Length: 234
Image 1 (cartoon, rainbow, N blue to C red):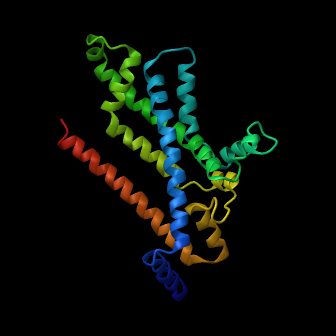
Image 2 (cartoon, helix red, strand yellow):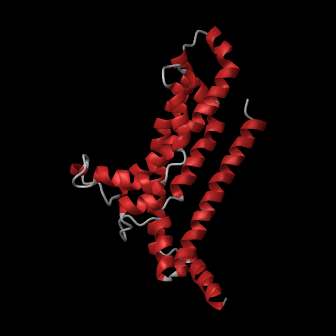
């Protein structure tokens, strides 16, 4: 018990003193996860909207596939990305393996199905509500996509947050493609796993506190935005 209390005390000491190693790990984690989520959102939101609005052969199969891919095993994604980026792989010439770019690529693959599947459902619901009105204004199906995405922006924020939660908490894929290299590819989740195995609970607890705090702040901020939109937005 005394050892645990001492570890918590040291963890808070690292946070209060703004330990350089801790800040470096947190900064890289945020850079990787936020970049991955932004890229996944840029692709997934219009993709989900297109699947919701257009009718084409195999559409139902694509919907099922998107929903199934929401549960992609991270280690499988990491393995696939590793094979693509390895020296013998088709993208090995880029030299991206064991770099932050490789971790971003793996997280994009994990987050994209989540954003696309949730966006599809949200846009499909909005289309059922506003289709007649948009048609009467002369809007085509393709032109309705940005309108519906904007109208559902607060709902879609939930999809993006779900993607960020998946990315920020991911360990297996980034460990495989990033290698958990100190000062290069070590992020919060991989550092927590490593430091716990080493017995350095202070740094692991400090990083865990930061990770939990970021998650609470982001979700709390999103909830405030949704409430503002519901109560005050025109």
